[in-house]
Amino acid sequence: MNHIDENNKNYDENNLDRYNILLFLKEYLRDIKRGNRDIEYLLFLIDVSIPIYSVEKFFVDDESAELRINLEELSSKIRNIENIYGEYSQRIKFEKMETKIFNTYLKNLSKVLQIKKNTEGTYRKAVQANIEYIDKVTNQGYLTKIASSERIYSEKFFSYENKRIFKNNDKKICFCSHSNEDKLYTLGLYLYFKNKYNILLYLYWMYDQNTHNGVGLKEHFGNIINVSDHLILIKTNSSELVVKGPSFDYLTIKQWCAWELGCFYPTCNQGFYIESINFSSVVRKRFLENKILDDFKELKNIGRQIQSN
Image 1 (cartoon, one colour):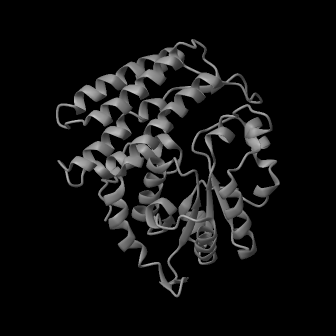
Image 2 (cartoon, one colour):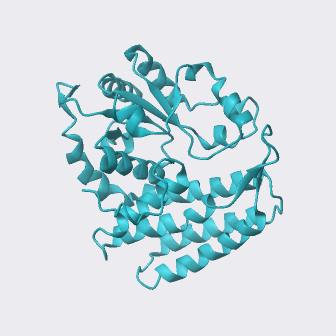
Image 3 (cartoon, helix red, strand yellow):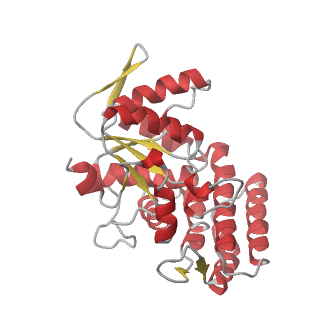
């Protein structure tokens, strides 16, 4: 069921970046099970994440890969994150571990402000601090209940028989290839695909956490990919923000993601990628120079590119 008032929404439905998907997720969760502690906590995580992704970003010129940010705005929004914690603490009794992890998040953001440069590196560190914080929190099991309820939804799309997976009908299935630390953002994407298009976005962390060895994982992923209509790659922050390292990191695709892309290729179906953080045309060109992504298209319109095909 779609809980969002389509006439009173704040997000851009044609934009799948982190800022807009978190806005969508906030609107979706805000109207369900009000007073539920798990939902309230997810809303808190969204509210202390949105400020990072709403900071004004721009480039030196149209052809430049040099990202610039409004440093004064970033500083103001980081200070406000502590106020958000105070507001939520009036209705959520934060546990000691939750407070400890949050304080570490604030500390890491404060270190970012000490750089005092409006550069790509400053923004990258703020984004990374947010992702690491969300990853630590969600690994404590706060998404478990949502994941459990959504497994029932997946039964409409595929079923298991003798370790093989069969598609139940002509409903669309998209295999999501992503970093395992990106649970909050991918949850938002999952619910967006489900509630607006009735498309299943398959997320490993949501459905199949009991397969731990590499052989079992490859067998399972291969089966899911074979029944998927499309594969959607969520680009990593290192590629989107041009993390500098010993090699061309803007061409980097995580090992498991590269394996998944390789399994998907023989299906001859269309693959897509999502830019969760906007970057310049130069960086976009460099990323697409990765031969693994030949024939992959940027996903901009789910209805036109996936639902209608």
